[in-house]
Image 1: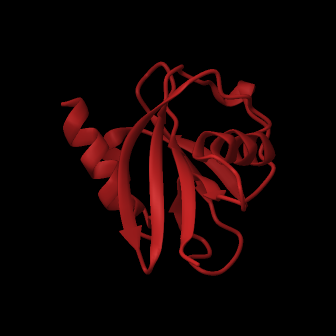
Image 2: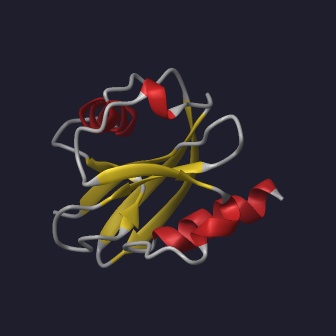
Image 3: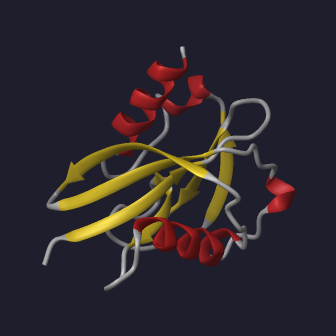
Length: 127
C-alpha cells in the first residue's frame, strides 16, 4: 500500500518558517517539515492535526492545501498553516530541535527529503 504523509508549512509573524531537526533515520540531523504518516481510515486533515498535536502540542485552527509531492514512493500532501505561530506557543514532542528560519537561511541548511524543493516552491509563490 502506498505511503501518504501530511506535512505542514508553519510560519511566524515575521514570515520565518519552522523546521524540525530529525533525531532518527532516515535523514537524521537534517531539517524537515513537521507532519507524518496518514493512518488507515484517517482523513488527511485529521492526520495533519494529530501529527502537529503530537509533535508540537499545537491545535491547528486552519490550514490550506499547498501541493502534492512525491519522494521515494511516498506521497506528501503539503499544507500551509493559516495563522502565524510563535515559538512560545509550541512544545517540541519529536525531533532534536525546532527553529524558525528566515527564507534566506534555508538555502544553506541541510534539509532532508525533498523539503528544500517544497520550501523553495512555497517561497517563490510568496514573492
